[in-house]
Image (cartoon, rainbow, N blue to C red; front, side):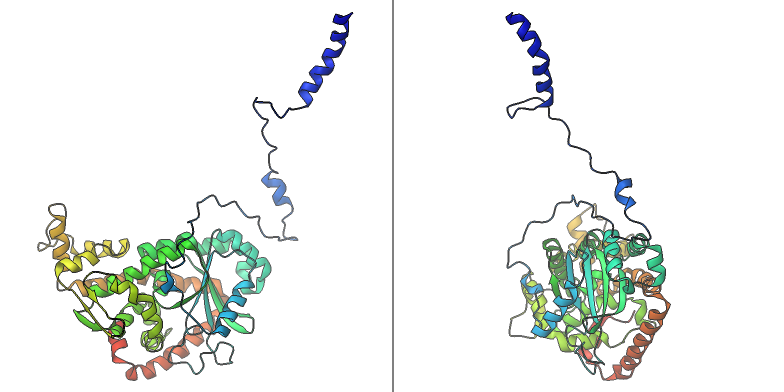
Length: 430
């Protein structure tokens, strides 16, 4: 009788064991349900419903937080009204921005402008740079939010086309002459990877050169702040190698500010104010000193008291070799290739210390560095100028070019009265 009862209960127990899972079970767990297929997700996005593309999970590790005091020289103060305006403009963008800064005459005062207030009718345009993680995704969201920021051709071809154009070195897409919050702005979009690569290696000097000059950081990122500190230190080392044993702080600032203009095609064409470096340095000397003073005095063999405007440095081959060996990789490669095969320079493999001392002690090293900086800048600046015809469209391109020609004309008329220190140290004419 008992055996017959157990036989009737057995199917029920087997069914329950297959349909339930106890908390104490140690067997293999079933895999989770697969996510919806890409085809199903894309089905809701069409020409009639151009919703932004979904975000792709970012698997790269993000740098941990840096100490609060690290890179404090990069945080330059601006007027409260300017800070509020810059933050309000950036806050308007729905697309995720990892790092953002504003630069130019609309943020820090420059000579040559009738008004430095961007809210005035004759005020300068506000310039922004945004570093993002996924440019295709970013432009998809931004094009949906602000279609008027893009020319008709770019809107027709879509965010994939925009991101492909952006990838062309130096890796920036600009939307220019945009009205937001009562001011005219221009903003560039690049990737965090591209920005950090240029800050470390100076592969184009297009982004790193802009960040040699005073900028106002609006959205910070630990990885960018770290590589920017390397970029600023590289700028100091490069400038020291092109300056004598004693020089003024104004000469240092002008030399650094001029790196990104050396070889720039706009300085040859009537498209940029020829006295721009002098205009920047004359008005922004306090910001330059905040950026660079701590970095300069931390280098061995350099003497620059906080209250002084004169800087002294050790110009022995050994001291200069220490700077030379730590130049950004692209510039260092250009310089060493210039000296390759010269009989006066020993083989690097034979004695590396002697090799670097010979290079650092060469009387022509300063001119070689200046020429190689121009060679680095020339190609990317030309490509970016041509890309502007695509990113701005024909109408905005004509208007923007007209404004640049006007600035060039004003700068050429006033160049004879420019500050001699800034002019001689700028290196802005190839």
